[in-house]
Length: 381
Image (tube, rainbow, N blue to C red; front, side, top):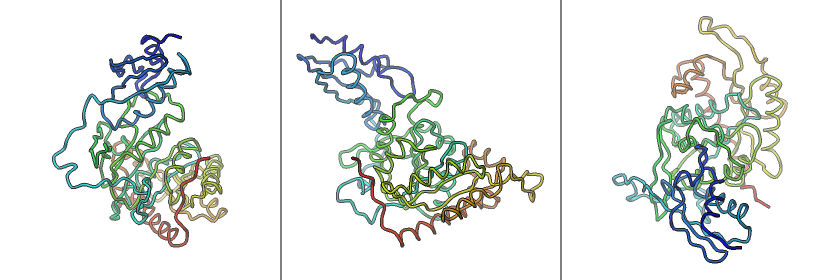
């Protein structure tokens, strides 16, 4: 077989850049440096910055496309180049140390490991992301150093909830390595794939690409020293959950559900996933969201639209603490859409409920750390 550049280019046209729908050739990402020697091909892909979260995934996808559409016998060598160097903020890197999660590096200092809390739900639509955002801000308001990772690659919502949709994280070079600098607001350091993609374009990804992007947001970011690292996980059980437990020693999980039976059935699956002997992540507690509806004109009335105390009953049945019951109030939705989560107004009933949730998570985390050994990262076989 004789290789020539157009064969390679045609194969690369099948590789689409996530979030845009365009292929990498159309976007001008294939550098004009292609070299072919027998069955060996080498070229470069152009990225806007070295911290582009799709860098590794697109390199792997390009290699796979060449093997699939040209020949599996080709040796492929792909390099990445940067067309837009990251801004150099005055004094940004001077005197700083690489404070990536120490447990991601061999010989890390366990004493600096933050409490990693996975906020999870068995199904979508129960307000899990709302709980995660308010929990993170609540912990920060209690004086803790907090990081928040939006792990929902296919439906990121944290940029909108924090009203930072137009922000674009930059990178800093620390000890010779480019690290993504999280966006900070309300005392919380936060990263989301939503910062890097067009919000109106669907993410058409295979599981491996999503997992690789998530790993980069975890391990190639300048999170610094944290007390709590909150993971807003996707609903259900998926590749993303496996990636998280295989990448991070999760301290504990907080399961969110509404009181209705269909949601409770899925919440049980979430409980069982974390309690699986191969995963073995402690459950810190359950949160009952949308516990009752209280209209603004009748603040003392409670209407149990989705059933009454279903999560409370599940907590008693499974021996898991009930951390909070959050009422369904119109202002919760409005504040989330406006980027001002309810916990920022602790004098309101809902704001106070979220602040109490944060305090109880601290109590349960301290209790868990005192009684149980540190969670181990799940090994891949």
